[in-house]
Amino acid sequence: MSGHGFPKQLRLLTAGDYRNVFDHAALKVHGKGLMALACPNGLDHPRLGLVISKKNVRRAVDRNCLKRVARESLRLRQGSLPAVDIVLLARRGASELDKATLHRQLFGMWRRLERDAQKSMTS
View 1 (cartoon, rainbow, N blue to C red):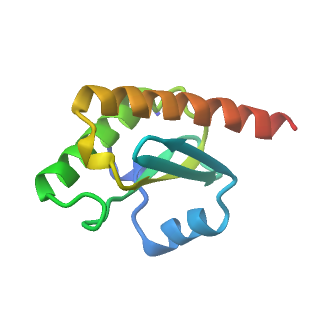
View 2: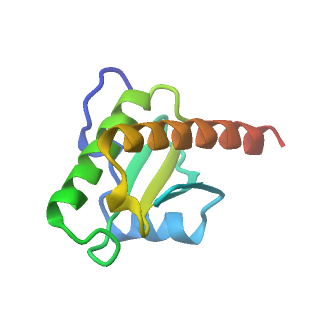
């Protein structure tokens, strides 16, 4: 993947895509207020799906901000991430994170995901 856009091919679009990740999640990365599930996708780039419920992040403004920051974070790291489908779930406490903390949190999660994916491929 060249460039730093966020086209449709970098997103999980169908319910089947999400179900596949939930059913076959080989990797699980936790962060404060966030959790990422991932499974290999057979493509040459990562794809992202977001599950941010109103129950865990009350205000629409906060949900939309979280989605924007998550997309931007993946967009900037897409070259170094393995070819996996990722579902990012917001948990309780995600709305208390400010943008800078959220960026740091996601950066650390992507780094752990990258490391764990390399470990699972070599073993």
